[in-house]
Length: 224
Ligand SMILES: *[C@@H]1O[C@H](CO)[C@@H](O)[C@H](O)[C@H]1NC(C)=O
Image 1 (cartoon, protein in one colour):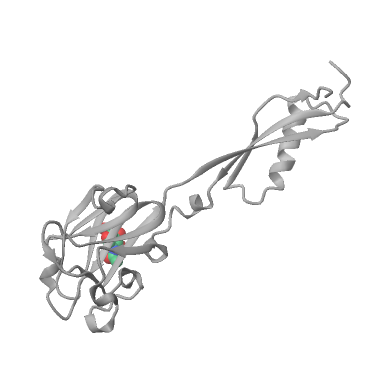
Image 2 (cartoon, protein in one colour):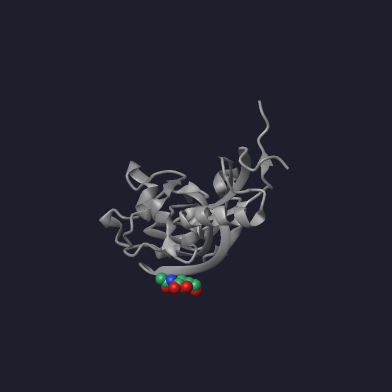
């Protein structure tokens, strides 16, 4: 073994867990931070984001309901901008008129945009929602897109609010650091390495997010 004051390379592995990992126990309406779109916009002013405006107002004249034209198979979609585990979806139906228009609508959840997302797996076929009521559907599905479609009919699709409750699917990332130590201690000694690691860990405030460990035995630096 060479003299222990020689520079040594130590390999430190850091597992960075997404901050979202800490949020996995919160149920929030993740639709509010999404982007909505739909098959068409009735009179150019009942646009898709009115269904994610955090307002369940169901009187159509309150201008808080998204509405399509009487398209064939009209659909609405929210892009959650990340993949979520979605526990349930709450839909508020129009209150002042024609609640039956929602009958037969389907909720689809997934991460594909094939067929505008309408081919993603289906959570439910909605039989009916009373006028102005908010109906809660349990899905327990994973995806980035939530679609609502009334398939195979020409109909107006009106959604006064769509709430999507879910938690982000954790994202795992890894980073590796190469550290150079000039040490009077023998860093090839496992006890010494453990002491150094403990010091690094004590400086790491978010220990629930970052997990730090040695990934390799130290190596003597070779001259270049
Ligand atoms: C919707 O249903 C889920 C699952 O049954 C439940 O946990 C949640 O509290 C309900 N939400 C509302 C607003 O009723």
